[in-house]
Every structure is written in C-alpha cells, then in structure tokens.
Image (tube, rainbow, N blue to C red):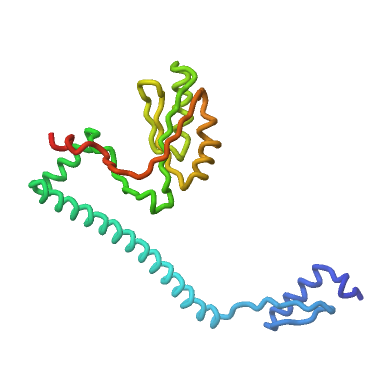
Length: 219
C-alpha cells in the first residue's frame, strides 16, 4: 500500500470525488488532510440569487450616481459661466446674448487668447523675482535659434524678450530664494548655448502688473 507521501494524483482525485458525493466538509485521505468540494444544492443556489441581484443593483446604482455627479458638475459650470456673462452684460450695457456673441468674436479673432487663473507667486513660496540680461557670443540666426529653443525648455523662466541695444535677451525668473536662483543659474542659465555674459538683478518688490495697458481697452 502506498504511503501518504507517494499517493498518486489519480487516487487523490478519486477520493475527493467520493468525498464530494458524501457532501463532507473535510476528510483525511491516506494521511493527507484535504478539503472536499461540496456541490451546490438547489437551496444554496436559491439563496445566492438574491445576493447576486443585490450586488448587481449596487453596481448599477454606483454607475448612476457617478453619471449624476458628472451631469450636475457640468450644469454648475454652465450656470457659473452664464452668471458671469449676465454680470458682464450689465456692466457694458449689452444683453446677455449680445455680450456672449461679442465674447465669441473676441475669441475667434484672437484678441482673447484664453483664460487662466491669476496665481499669486508668494502664496506658492516663490518670493524672489530676478531680471536676467543675456548677451550672446554672436547675433546670428543660428545662435538666436539655439538659445531660444533652450530657454523655452527652462521651467523657471516666466518671460523672455529679444532686445535691441547692448543686451540680447531679458529674462524674468521666479525662484523661492537666493539659493534656489543659484540652482537655476547653475543648472540652466549658465548652460545655455552661445551665451557670452549673464547679468542678474534682484527685484525688491512688484509695483505694477498688467496684462495690457488700460488705454488699449479705452480705444
């Protein structure tokens, strides 16, 4: 007689099938403790059906709630946009429809390029503004294109202008502190291609900041 350690898979399978027919919860077969497979009865299947239906109902309800939240979110956004248009229409003396049409025309003609949040840098810990002037070794198209492509990839530069006069570029850099600007200088500015000279000036405080001159809106 084979021992418990040398029992064949076939013998073990036959024993399990016999045990399943007896609906036993467990049995020791040739010294090996195994769990028997108990077939479902009609009563068990009947009990499981409401459970499945309940789980499906809960899943359907979750999908419905997610869709309802999405619809309500879009509705709220639309209401806020309409409210702002009504307020704007009242200020400029137009009907909401005419105001909306005018805004659409400004967007289509490119006068309104987009909408963005006006973030306060100091609230984000960016308290150091540095104006950096750059002079290139040469003012050829090759040098200008190489520098502009590189500076556009520098995430700490918030503006860059090509200048006339002795300096080629004026940059505005926003940093957390002097140590942070030193990092920006070492990792980015000093590695720009074709740069002959870098001069940095630290801003004491901001006095005026406008997107465009106010006189441009009065014409």
